[in-house]
Length: 313
Image (cartoon, rainbow, N blue to C red; front, side):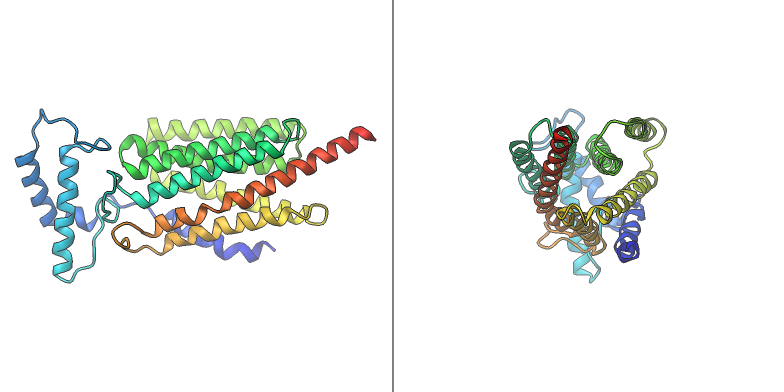
């Protein structure tokens, strides 16, 4: 059965292993560098404050203006649209650097908020794993919030917050898979998994902050944890499919998450200077919480019924 999902998983690995470039053809181009130097010299002074909007400084605005000057020069000379600092050129909208990805991140956030409300309205607090999934939802809401902030304004701080929170979502999904696989009851296994995951999250953040902000290491950590997470959930679904008919929702969600990442392989200049492959990926993940939380509701209600049955016996 696992061989069936090998191709999607391999594609995910290939995408995530790609290291971001230190420079790109656009920002390395002479037309960009000369334009930037001229713009900063003429328009920017040491006493100048921040520009209006999302903390865009004068040099930031010069980079933005010179980016389009460079794009025009490339296109006029029959050269493909270049990337700048590892990113495609995007038109700002409401001061957002990557407006589509930012807005689609907020859509994902709202999806989790709405489904969390549905989950808490349908699942009693005494249901097994109730607080696990509430915590999971809050972790996802936090991660999508910082994803929206990062795509609205890329900076060293927003980049780190986006990376750390995205990894927390991946790691917590792995953690919840381990807890569900081992059973909802408290045990040495669940305690050990909890301690290990908290420890690894702390190590991951401290290493990137204090030792080296290593993009390659961060990607590999996401790949390994995410791949193991997928395998655990699929194995659990295979084991439970005869007694819990609703587990198809879990399996389908996990598979769709893996498949949607394939959109990242279709790297192309943004359509209308707004929609690129990454934005389409964020858009494709928006409906998935609907199916996932439906599974969580069914599973918690099933566990609660089993708990009541044991008490009755």
